[in-house]
Image (cartoon, helix red, strand yellow):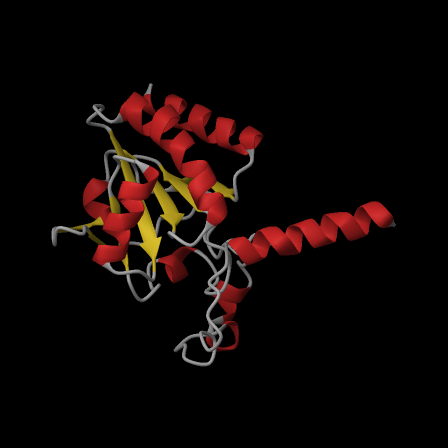
Length: 195
């Protein structure tokens, strides 16, 4: 019983570190779970994803902080990793050095690989400061209104997550928070897709 209480408390603490912490955020939203179509609600898993492996990755406009844009579906033919992050997320900051060293530095020169960081609800100036403070060199892009995040996860779900997409544009692996075993599995999936 005591172990369950400790585990529940730990999960709540972790969730609070990686969830937007804005008092009126739900009140000011256009879409809530109540307003989502039944098909989307049926796909929300215990980690907050509304997509699953095997799904076509929802398309969106990737907006770089320098103003350049590209559609996700223009990257078909490549293995693509989407990393959802935010400067206020402690678990994201914990994971990012491993993404930088174990994934980006290893595959950055592979023309068949793309890594796109997607920063939740922050502007370009904040992202530039975030990049400088973390020392990552992979691109971190804008999702100022959170609509890209909401294509993949329930609106108020925690932000630390990675989505791996194969060259056909299908989702092949999803992660949540930073778990070393899951992260190692993500790295292996990338290796397999790039063989």
